[in-house]
Image (cartoon, rainbow, N blue to C red; front, side, top):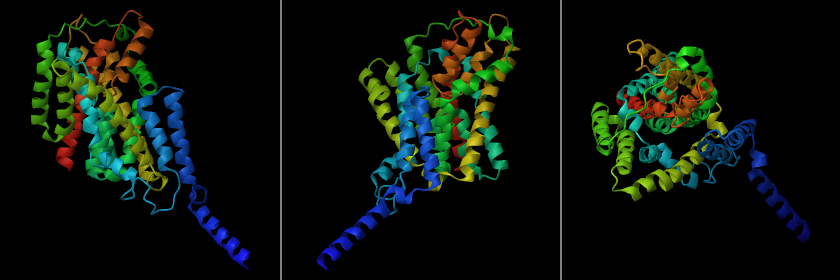
Length: 386
């Protein structure tokens, strides 16, 4: 009898243990999301598409979709869990400004300072943001949700996370994944659009070399830039203030250690945390919805519209410029803020038609302008939607 009771005890405990395993709680949704995470990891390693972003996000998707019994305080949405504490930086918009601090500390604005009219290309590429906003409203999303979805068109993951944390936190996972996905796919999405919209003659346009920018100009730019943009859009201060502060650390020449920390260890740590926790937030039970699919569709459309807007604006602008001062429309795609990938795409596409025509430095102008433009657009949306 004692043996029978012992085996019964072991059997009950084993049965209870099995009910807590992932195998007992798995659903098709979990499997779909795990495959999605594995696909991100594949793109990061095999295709080298934004590996610094897609690898943490892909692994985070795996972490977030391990099935478990609720109440164990292990899920990203469960109060008291470690993942929930780490996710706080995403949910409250703490991580994106720190990312912008690092971006500012590693960005050279010389191309933009030497040719300020390139700022207009960065502004034109934000057309995708407001186009997606209107389309999302038409599809039944609320105004706040539409604003958060629209920012995907800026191809700026931290900005998308920051805005969605304020306007639509329940959609943040889908918005962040869509934004980072399209950032990673810049080399795939943009070249066909650039070729479609330009002529053979336009692709061969040679631009004047950028003038030499003085140290004084580099120091004044982040100070004046911060004051102008933040007076115009105070709600963009967390992003714009940190972006220009990071750039001042770099260009001042007296805070090299701080600039190196912001552009190195700090941004690396925050990138790991933001990628892993955003990925973990895509639990199948909350992520696999009709709204998420709609967000991916709207995000793709807004990114395409943004690329169209940048390239077509350059073609229009060239109508008013004299020969010798015209802009190669192949840098119009760089108005989206996927730094530096979209500028690199401008260079690669241009080299296919003229191997001696180097567009990278020119493309960096609208590229960094796009970073500023997307943050300004986020501030505008936050200002009238919050």
